[in-house]
View (cartoon, helix red, strand yellow):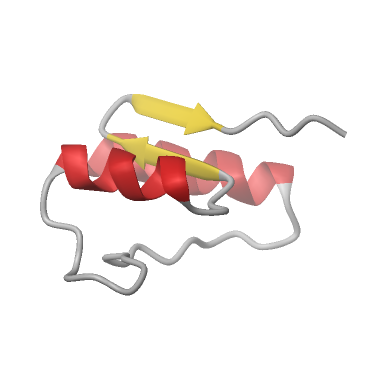
Length: 64
């Protein structure tokens, strides 16, 4: 898993001027997210742009 995380950080650094990411627990006015399902639920109802879990990356598409 460490190699996969390094690849994610490296790709982010190549795509942006910031070669680092902050890995945090997240929530919105509720207890800290503890499971993948809680993470997805929080992602879907908030303004988060993307979520990553293991080999998966989901990015929201916004209509303009």
